[in-house]
Length: 389
Image (cartoon, rainbow, N blue to C red; front, top):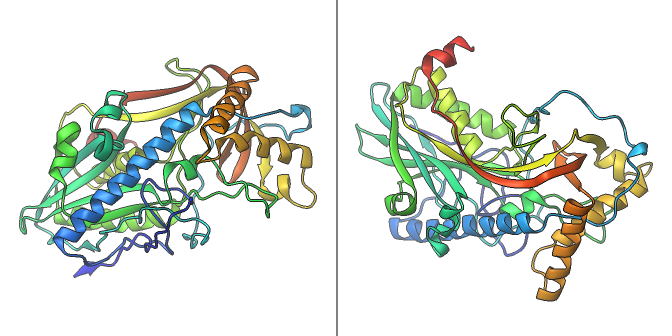
């Protein structure tokens, strides 16, 4: 038996789109189940890695492009919510991506169904981590601790290996910043992310400049439970979120918003396996996180309330002006001008407009404004996990 968990059918084209480090869109919540031969699959995975690299380029660009243009009066804004961090919103189903949202590299090009394991099988679980854009720059981004995370599995009964990861459908830049389409009043977002499961583990990719280490052994029954959970998690958690937003870098500082990315999927999966009874080794595990630092955010509204017929046109224009300098593929002169606009907005005027849960928020930015960290987050302890249930 094989569980048909296809995570989004692929369709790739060269454009910008809704949110993935590699690829293009699809419908429903399905794990790409394409049959390809080994050579072709390896080639497509290299292309997928390229997309992950492009995502890193967008990420690095996002760090430089910190910005916007003119602000607006905060006095006219709805009072901010005070339940922090704002919970990530889940949905009843995964919508089909808009055809406008496309990417050069197909999402999950060698995806396959998640197999149903024999209950008494021993499944080795691996932590996988490698620098973003490793295919092009090797360990360069690894030195900056900009890493991509995934999970590997090996069946001891069959000897087969598998990789599972979660990433953007249409490159990272599209998840982080919108498209400003002339025919639309509101910014247009291509920010879906989804899980991808495929047979095989690219040992060289993960080992050469990253990590491939066994963290646990689970039963086939646990694996099958996890597969059902992955399907549900993937159907309800549909969009990628780049930013973590906190009050300051200090320990215990208020967290306003949490990211929802590849590392968070790995952490959710490990915690779920612990709930199912998995016992993890005592191994140090670190993850990349990108932070914005701000005072208490102010809630602005959703697309309809801000950009609709009765919306706040002044606010809507300010948001669009903010996002304008983040356009991709700019000529050198315009790119440099955009960097100045971004610096002026985020660093000088200390403004940032965040799109989270399909709603807009104003962030009054604070020093150090933005930071990439590589923080230790321990593997789950089964006893602590069970006591917290």
